[in-house]
Length: 619
Image (cartoon, rainbow, N blue to C red; front, side, top):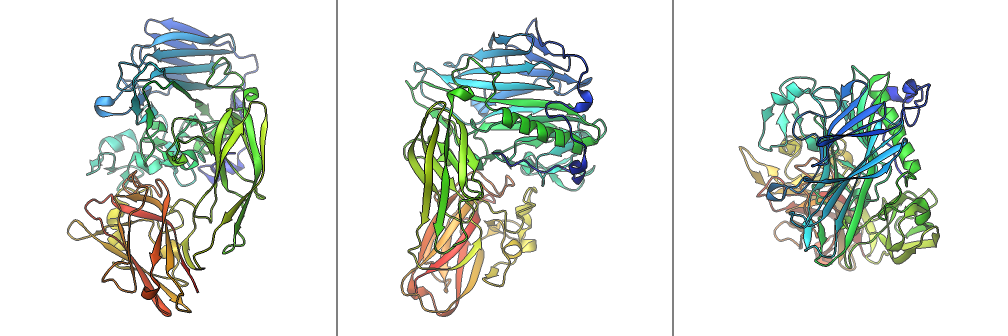
């Protein structure tokens, strides 16, 4: 199930409906022309009367995509392309061989394959492009394959990049927070460089005086089924549209780049926010299909809002059509009849939170390695859905196999799991009621800060975190120490989304103390438990003090670190939590203070982002 984002403008809600698969204004009165495939030297040309795509055979690169008389691919060496890794391991397909998988009047599917043993990544890459009759979008999918005869290999970054022409489109549309007019190519070309190469400071245009960066537009893929650009002057739009997210790594909290300055990205595996790498052993036979997803073009009266609304509806169409009936003959892509489903009801019981239930929980099945974590799983497929209000769930279109079922929900720190869930083709695996009993054996829940939801969104800057160099202004907004009083302070106002080093003057950083003040009615009968749930951690080590800042009662090193979410302008990377023991002797009846100090300040990227904090005290 998808949660579709709101339109970039309130105007979109009042627009007349558009046709789902193509704009009603452009619906032909006569049958659409057949799809054609023409080879011209080193290029292939796919056309259907509405859209024309030119592909370089050797590199599987999309060199041209024309629609309504406009070119939607920036001309030059790069075009729209697939790539792996970087530096000396950078790879784009080369020397590909062509095969035609399907060719008829209604659909053409071409494949461009590069063999892999001699490459930095010992996998074959087979890039497919698919054009359908009457459509204004070009599908693409890729099969990576590692035969057993290939050596061990590892893949980090794995992505597609689509570069758009200068100033054809002037609006970025990602979600309700990041949908706005963007700087022109000239604005960016004349912008001031900064100490971070991805960030520039604009000196002109609609965003003059502000920072601009591709990280401004990071998003969670599972809840962002499309993103793109639209034009104010011409009503045109260019979009990446996803009918499913089953092939992405790292589950429903995976995030990465989307739209940016005249460019669209999609990262299948890795590269930012601690995304997982893919490791394949020597002698291992492995294959995975990424996609299909749609490079969608549209045009609408009503400008960017109307084009966005149409892209949203196209995403709904793609989701409803998944798995695609037109994609046949691929063993890595079983049809609907070759897949199964998993159903049940999640019941959540927490004596400290009687209102907590299974409604709205993320429920999914995945296949991490033994001892692994779905947050770092990239070799297989994952299938996730949201439970209904009563906790019932159904996960459709699952490839046959043995899985572990996972569930997590807002309000609970940990997660539920059940191993050995078997899925068979054309069958539903009924799991019945799954009861998640949250253990409360550490005492009474005295206080909480935030909501366990694997994000720092509820804290200050939780809705405008996507600003370059925001962390350099913390000293202008916050004192050192930060003082937070339970029952009086407001997390949205008085608790920052990130605890980093405190900016010093004229340069450098110093440790930043965060104090939590609270009352205890009685002396605790035993040690208390401080739960620290982290939405992100990078190079972090926390000293925890209780009522005295002379000596910490504990030092906490988050178990999951990496992703550089602070400098990459996000509110989460990967999730973990720690439980800290607070000796009873360090607590008092009446007023108490717990102090948290992020002690590592050697780099501005070192930080923690808290998801949630709580204290449980035995009476």
